[in-house]
Amino acid sequence: MADALRYLIFTLCCGAALTPAVPAPASAQSVRFTVFSSQVVSGLTYTPRSDQLPTSLVLYPTSRSPRYEYLGAMPLHFTDATTHSIVAEATVPPAIANALVLLITIDPAPSSGLRYQTYVLDDTIARQSVGSIAIINFSGMELAGSLGGQPLTLTPGLNSAAAIGRSASLVLRTTIKNRTYQVYAGNVELAKNERALLLLLPPFYHGSFEVQSRLLIDAPLGPKGPARHP
Image 1 (tube, rainbow, N blue to C red):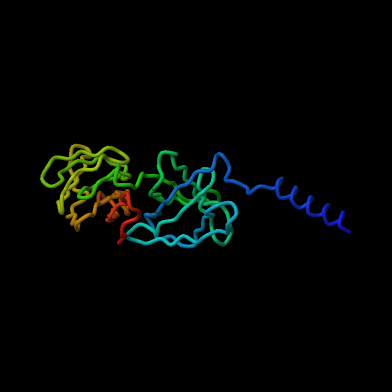
Image 2 (image 1 turned 30 degrees about the horizontal axis):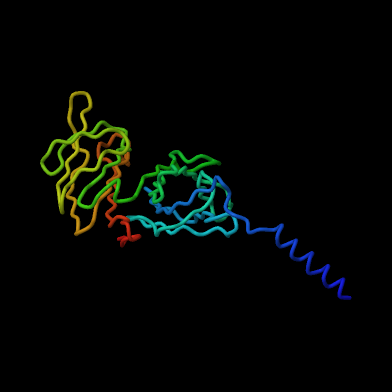
C-alpha cells in the first residue's frame, strides 16, 4: 500500500512538472484600444484572448468606445455577435500599445466577408498633444482652407496635428472645374487637457459638396493611465 501511494505521488509530481502553465504565444501582442464607427453600429464582439469568451463592443455615436484590452496574434478580429462571422480586422503595429480603431462602413455593403475597412491610429499623447486638432481626410476631395485664420491644405488620410489652444475656426473648400465650393465650416472648442480628431467623409448625397464630419474630443491617455472620455 505504501509503495502504491509513493508511486501515485511520484506520478502526480511528474505530471505537474510536465504540464507547465501555458504562456501566451511568442507572436502574441498586447494592446489597449478604443473603437469609433462613422455609422451607427451594434452587435459586434471581439475575443480578448484565446482562453476567454467573446466580449461585446459598446460603440458611441459621437465619441470613442470604452477602452478594451487584447492579447493575441494580429490581426484583431471583430465579429458579428449573431453569425460569429468576421466583419472587420485590424492589424495594430507592434510599436502601438494604445490604439484607436476607426471602422469605416464599406459601401455598397458586400453580401459576405468584411463589412468595414479599418484605420489604426496611435492614440497616445505622444502622437497628438492636448490643445490640438488632427484631421483625417477620407472625403475623396482635395481640400484647403484655414484653421484659426492660418492657411491649411489637407492631404488624403491622416494629417499632422495642429495646435489650436482652446478654440479655433475651421473652413475648408474644394475646387472643381475652376469653381470653389465650401465643404465644411465650424468651430472647435476644447476644455483644458482636451484634443480633437476630425474625420471627414464623402458627401451623403451624390452631387453634394458638403462633406460628412465626425468630431471626436477626448483627454488623451497619459503616463498614469487612461484619462476621462466624453
